[in-house]
Length: 324
Image (cartoon, rainbow, N blue to C red; front, top):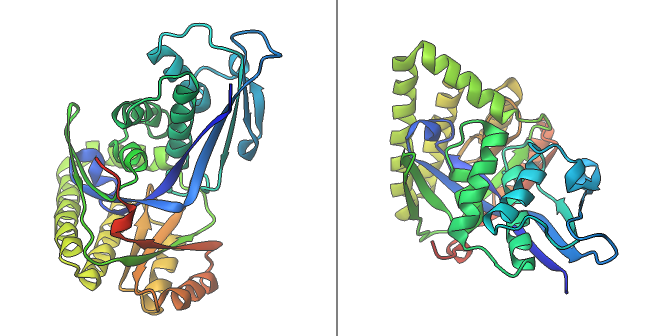
């Protein structure tokens, strides 16, 4: 039986993080320059039921049976077996790798889960639909983030810029975003891990204490997202930048920014970016800056001078789309 591989991209939240957990919309974009990959191969020398897992990026080389049942890798593998009602799988080896920085707001955990689910279900002869892949990945997201919105698993599964809103637990609105004008995003890493589950939990605790104050901030973020969608679809990229910067200030008000993130946002604006903000959970991880293609290298230099450990430039265009 030949080996089967699958991969999944990273992602960024363009606008709307944190508020999206509370029913407001957000816009997310896949980042194809960084990826997670899973390879599943038969291991006939081992007894049936033996699943050997190799994940060199995080120092794991063990069997499924030896991993804690709550480990996200174990949950991803077992979710496929359970969905297919397989109690004793064929002996196999699963190798997982990723170029997506961990704990940086780029969706590394979700991308790894999706790559595993796709590769393993295909290896077992029952490749899952996008809808099923996204649903299973959402359940695994709960391990990473506690109360996820579902936006990460959706944008990474479909590899499509999306407008996302969870209306209720059973009702999600997803719109494919048309892009009449391509635009350039610089993603710059603070080098500090982003504790997403912690920041999401802290915002929730603060919301429970002051619900009206935080609902007001979420409403303002939601309004920015709706305006951003209009600007994207009309090709008004520079206006989108101003909305991103306004979104960052509201994330500062939520308490999820940090001096390092704020410094990189300022540096990108001073270097000529149209707008900038943190992306993801905050308190570490990445900022994103919107710029013209010609400005990108100059802004990247400014970000590195301001302390960014590395930067990725990605072109967002209509050619990214897949069908939702």
